[in-house]
Length: 465
Image (cartoon, rainbow, N blue to C red; front, top):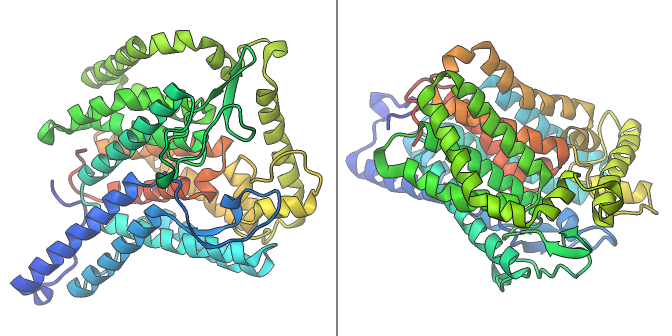
C-alpha cells in the first residue's frame, strides 16, 4: 500500500545501502513490537514495582506496576528512537486539534502532582501519559497502512475470545493465572456476575481486570474488524479473516454482559448502517453480518434470556437482583460524591489517577468500593481540574466536528469512516465507565484512536487492509 506519510529526508540525507538495510530491520522490529502491544493491550498481568497498600482501595488503583503491553511499547519506542536518529528526519505531531490538547493534558497531569492527595500515584500516571504521547507520535509517523493494525486487533480479539468462552462455559477460571487470569468463582464475593432466578452466573473476564474492560476492548475490535470487512480489499484475504474473527468475538461481547460495551458497539454499527444507506453493496454486507449474527447467536440469547432481561432492565422491579440495584446505586453515588469533591478542587483537581484516594479521604464511611466516577469527563475534571476536562472534551468532539463539516469528502475515505466509528464507540464507553481515562487497556485504545485519526487526515491511499 502507498505510504500515508510523506518522507521528509533530503537527497543529501539518503543513507548508504548497508545503513538502509539496518534501518529497515529496525523499522520492522518496531512495527512488530507495535503489533504485540496491540495484541496484549487488555492483558491484566502487572509486574509490581512499588506496592502502595491503601486499605479498602483496589490495588490496581494504587500499585505502581509495569504491564506486558508497556514492555512492548517501550521496546517499540526505543527502536523507533534509533530509527529516527539514523534517518535524521523530522517527527510529525499530527493534527493541531489533537496533539495540543494531548500535550496540555499531559502537562496538567504533571502539575497535578503538586496538589495531589497522593503525589506518588499522580507521578506514576504522569509518566504513563508522557509515554502514551510518544506512543501517539509513533502511530502518527509510522502507521503507513492498517494491515498490521488489523492483524493485531484480530489476534487481540481471538486471544481474549478463546479464554472468555471457556470461562463462561465452565463458569470458572481455566487455570491461566500465569497470563493474568483472575481466580473466578461466581459464588465468591467480589467476582462480577449476573443473576437470574437466584442463580449467579459468571460474566466473561478473558484475561482482563473486569468484564466491562473486556467488553469495551471487544467492541472496539469489532468496529475495526467490521470496517475491514465492509471496506477492505480482497488482497491478502483480510476481509475473510475479519469475518471469521467476527463470529466468536461477537459471542464474547454478549458474554461480558457489559451494557456500555453493547451500546458502544451498536452505535458504531448504526453509524456504518447510516453511512451505507446510499451504497447498496456496503448495506448488503452490513445486513449479511446482522443476519448471520442473529442466526448463530439467537439460541444463546433465547436460552439466557433471563440474564439479558436482568441486564437490560426488562425484568420487573421486584425481580431485579440486589447486585443489579447495587450497581446502579453505586454509580449514582460515585457521580454525586465525585462532583462534591470537584466543586472544592475545580481549578487544579485532586491529582492525576488519585480519585479513589480522594473519595476515601472525603467519605470514610462510603458504602461501596472506592473507584473513579463512571464518566470520563467528570473523572478528568476531578483529577486535573476544569481546564483538563475542557481539553479532554475538545479531543472527544473535534474529530466529529471535522467529519461533519466535510463529511462528503470523508465518505470516500474508508479509513476515516473506520476511525470515526471507533472514536464514537470509545466516547460512548466514556459516558458510562472510566477505564478509557485511567486504566492501561482503555488509555491505549483511546490514544491510539486519536493518533489514527491524525493518520487518516493525511493525504494518500485511504484503503483499509
